[in-house]
Image (cartoon, rainbow, N blue to C red; front, side):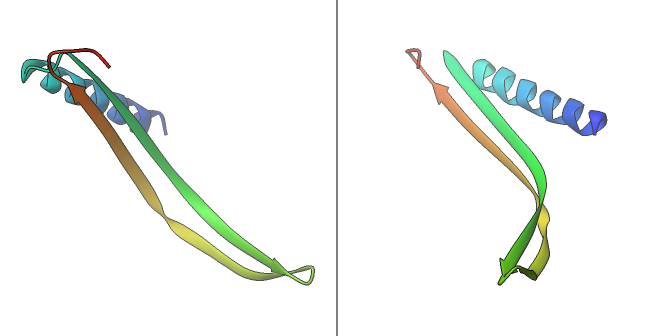
Length: 68
């Protein structure tokens, strides 16, 4: 887990540095990662139990010539 967090921090740092190198005057990055489980209950009993795939999302914004 610690290694994964470190890799995600490195990725976010890389994206921001590249944006600045390419002329961005401001930028931000949000990275989300997780695993999930879906549980359905019907009439007091578990009706559906499913593991969901691991997910990773990266959101990036860059501004050129002004700040956010």
